[in-house]
Length: 459
Image 1: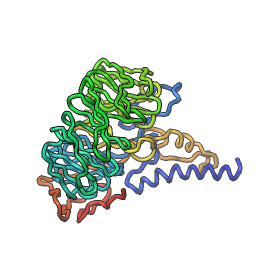
Image 2: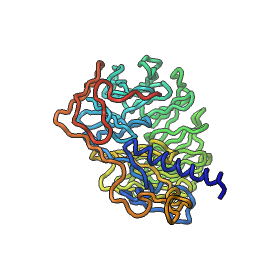
Image 3: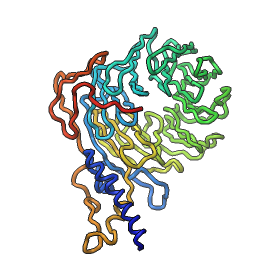
Image 4: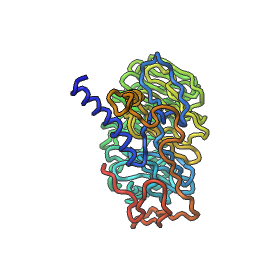
């Protein structure tokens, strides 16, 4: 092996070890021997050696953190922080990198919060509040004339609010300035923005397309059941309904291009790629249809009743159900890619942080007890190669890598459990300076609790 080749090889080794393991050590997350760590608390079932398709498995546990109270609703994320509505009218922010609690405020919410720009939007009754994402304090609020009917939508500065009386309202997401309103046929459900169009499903089976800039109605289509959330892709929009159909609707004029009958109500939004549409229904089936024609490519029986649509992560679909086990399936074939076993039922679908990366946290699970579990996919090749590198500082030519061989004695990462103090002081959530009474020292990173409790994140 020439000197140039050897130099390049060890340069790669240096990046693998230091770029991931040592860097994470300084971030309070030691991940040396990450492949061995992947067998920790996950129950993984793979297809076999004959399947060349990459998988998210094996998995490495990044951290485990316990929230101060059980969750009330599904969390949301901006890629750096998780925002979790808790019981007892609390809202918490957790740093994705290490699971440390950043702030907690008193804030009720009827729906999962929405994050956009530097704000976090929460809806309760007929009010929408914009909070500073950095601290949880209030920026501004909207007092509306009817209760909010679905999670607030934020997209590129647009803030869309649906009401139970059928009104659909658009605001400037920076300051709450009203832009337009439109009366729909029925209660507005979760809307979707795609380019210059806004697509609004409604409780009576209508689906409407509006001009985003003006709110003018472009077309309206009546379907046979209550629509689920819409996925827009190319010149079509895709959605399922409670009449057991998945629909492909023309984006421009609302024509039904094709539909596929299932044996039960379609659940959640479909996942759409260049080749296929993936969706689940209450006949416990996961299906893949050709995107343009609707021809079925494959279907798979689900081992549990689905509670939402599939979650796309890298080369697999994650399927949360009514059991503690999270099942995954390959996009290409529908074959089982693996499963994550647990003893506690999940409170929400997996929260994907980075869908196409294999470094750092990729997804987080939230249990009904309030435990957050962060995972990352670990490539198996670095340690297999590093275990027998020629020319290493070993008598037998092997490079010793801690944890590269044999089982781990403890779970990697760290467990963060904030103290449960009666009458835990919280931010009131109103305008004004943010104050938290300092708590006892917490394990892991030391938090500053004076003023804004985390540095603002650039957007």
